[in-house]
Image (cartoon, rainbow, N blue to C red; front, side, top):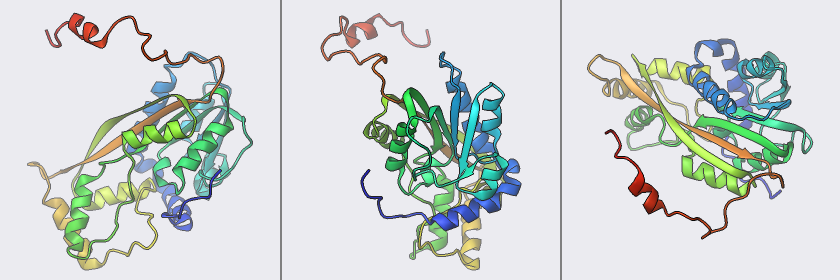
Length: 287
């Protein structure tokens, strides 16, 4: 593999945040619970059985427990020691080599891929750890998320804007990364989750509780006066009932490790019907 890119996330800070989040995680996992349900739902669409599974980013072990309940042998990995212990797994950074090639036939990851210094490298490692025709499913908070929080932070910092939210990956970029990592039959899509808060403190509590606060290197702390401005700016975006609607755009990934038994894309120009004909034959929507 190529050299790792410059690290924008503080690994030590990330481990510490995850350890601090572990005791109260169950009270703040609404976003991760949604992603876990989506991953399980997508797994249910696959007819083939899986036996050896890697849960990459184990959090409290909820996903691992659901998989184990289906008779799968699950190995969990988390960068935080407390999360790893809660899941009965291994502490390790998800973008560094952990297991030998072809160790698993299914790898799942919920809520951590957007926090890695080397996501392209992590995806390559995931593909290498999969056996031929093994499946990868992942979900994370993607581009365009937290617009109300972004606006509040900008108002708080004024002319001295500082990086308060780490860079986010959109659906298109995620698809490109899957293809570059060597996955076959890659699919990337997204959905939107809206959570309503009475105050900025509630949103911050959820982000802290699921270890999703700012991890950028060199990001300055938010002073008391700036925090007050942020809270006021957040409240100013409230709906008529006094609550603020915050948006989380969730990116979902799926891809297969290459195998000669997989279906291959049709040769360009080999189609026997045109898209225009198919559209002309489709009934009008809503009628």
